[in-house]
Amino acid sequence: MVDHYSKPSEKHFGVAHALGLAGLVPFILGASGAFLVPLPWQGLFIQAFLYYSALILSFLGGIHWGVGMSLDRVNSPGFNARLGISVVPSLLAWPALFLDVRYATLVLMGGFLFMRLYERQRESIELLPVWYRSLRTWLTAIVVLAHLAIIVRVSML
Image (tube, rainbow, N blue to C red; front, side, top):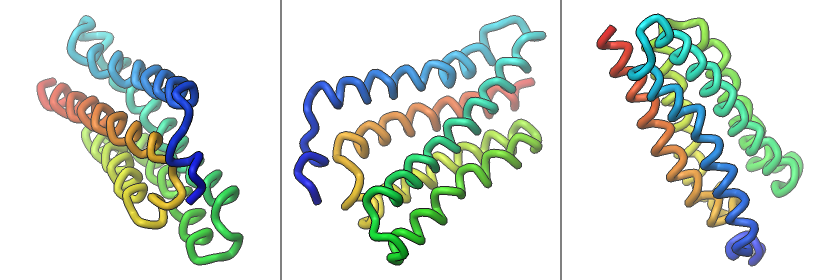
């Protein structure tokens, strides 16, 4: 592993951290709005939450496509596996949007957990920077909690 991947500059981590936190805003607003806005608007907040969730889950797949293209040896087993895994989030996210809200939320939440578990595998640990793995753990935890909040709210309606 290249040393600069394990020890990024503070500036690098600060930008990634800030952008990661900014990416949580629609999750937090969507989950909060599902409880706090007037009832006629709650469905809109939940739908926007699901659309954003599908978008970000697809983005996570794109990260692994990029990692495979730039860091894996072309046509190695790791390269082929990473490219295959990289399309799973999109293939889960898009059809999830056609499901009942509870099932859609569960599928999307499962996709985030699946990708985080994949990133904890030896092949990913060797290629992903330490700061990224740490940041993704916290971001995934918050994203999963937001999905659970949506499930709770929908169960109350």
